[in-house]
Amino acid sequence: MFVSGPAGVKCIATGHLFMLDYAQGLRGGVRAVERTPNYYQPHPTCAWALAGLGDTASAKREIQLAWEIDAQDILWKFVEEMRKWSSILPNRTQCWEGLAMPRSP
Image (tube, rainbow, N blue to C red; front, side):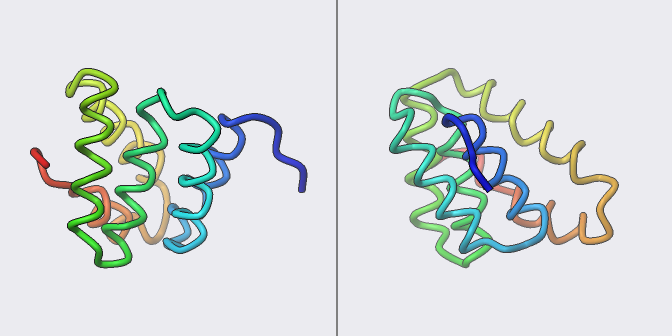
């Protein structure tokens, strides 16, 4: 599959996270960060993946990077939106656990 642009890469990464494939989600999130280093959204994607992989210290660093790029309220809007999107999934509880990121880095 051909993915065009950073938004496409981030969407693919999010799809992996919805399926609880945290390693592939992280891979896509990192690619999105590389393509758009000054955009906040790939960082919480990476944080979600890292939290799912059990690496909370690195997840907190990604949250800090997102906060440095954009306002903190934007970050929590991301979490709310991902919770809405995953609410129809049979594995929504596990998705929500990964999205329960710390409120401060």
